[in-house]
Image (cartoon, rainbow, N blue to C red; front, side, top):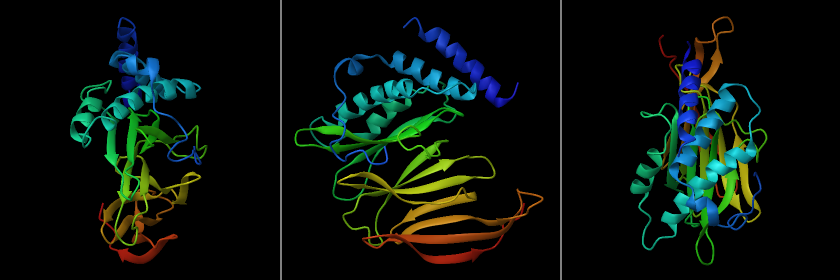
Length: 273
């Protein structure tokens, strides 16, 4: 059995056992906080839903937006409970609780993590990865007049061209970002080719907007530094041997208050393989 078949078999066992137990969504008030019955669902219900989501994609079945929103709604309720509590949110404790929801222990490509974004909105983001080969999504939370609320979503149903294969959320600060709330989603494979795609997002009064998107870049890595966002990638591969890189590049991007600009490009030595 290959890795995908093994994962699918494990997910099927989880499902059997658990039966016993937008690009321009308004920010920050498009979606009210998750309340009601979703907040009462036990973690076992989330485990069942998460396993089904990964199983659908691994099995090539049609994926369900409703199913994904049900699973993410449970995560929303857990996150908002912490954000709305008195005092500074304890993200370490919240992320430990979210990590315990993983279907597989130790988890394989499955994780759920909340982080604070920069800027003056006091916003938070949840990066959700539903396991090896499963879908991924981002949820944004921002304060309203009385409490935090789900403000926007980034996923393949809200943004049809969104590449949602395993993602990370990277806040962008410094280098002219000022009070702007900016973050990069990094999606792609984590194997030896490190093939990734990068998108810069910015919440606006009209919604969360994709400001810039890279091509799918091979052998790519990144760093978010005070002097900008550094992106390293293979700019030229061997046509006959795609694993061989002929030219490595490193670009530095900054936000100048209006636009995302590449301000530096450096040729790097090709790594030996």
